[in-house]
Image (cartoon, rainbow, N blue to C red; front, side, top):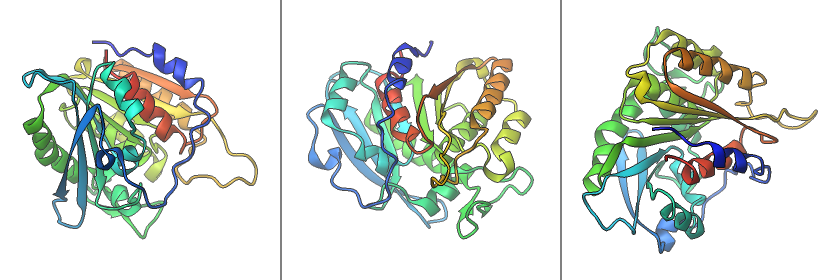
Length: 296
């Protein structure tokens, strides 16, 4: 099964107006307001160390009348922020396309991002240490807990989803941005639950290029059954402009190196560059493209 990029590229040329995500309390989302096109269920899950509570939104298209039908699904990190971008015009468009099941994995918070929690949950541990350590970019918070978070996702969250709706194993996608993009790539190396991996502006320079090193060190299981789309903006900061700590001047070149590695392993991998978008702006642009042009 191939991933169609024609519409993605068409949209990618006109997304410069997407605003950078803001860290401020969120209002009611579509699950709370009600949708004409999707029904939503919400469930909370605890981290394995009981220190974090994950809030998960499950969106099932109302057009799905056949309970035996297996549907495509998109698992999305930073679920609180994701839910703030969903609305009924978008959900209507999804039902007119491939009607994916939506799984937004966030935290028990009214903020779009839970920085300390995602720093731990979305980043890989040092291959030698193999355990969480202070985040090199922000030592006041921990990092390197992606393996434990993945256990919660695969052993708790995914089974709950599949108790409510049947999923097509050939169309199970995972999307993440920045640190979330690292989690997507780490999950590609770690297993085969997902078939499609969407890594948006992954923070490849984080921890002295830890993810780059891991990609080159690990042989990917069943590579021909996996599909990868790397996404990155091409905007450098202007003089005097505040720059995200996750911005990488060499991000495009690093993504190309990863693409080359995946090509050598036989993975169906592509790289999409968003003209005129900064690191934070790629969040919404990539999310919309993945939802609207995902699997065909």
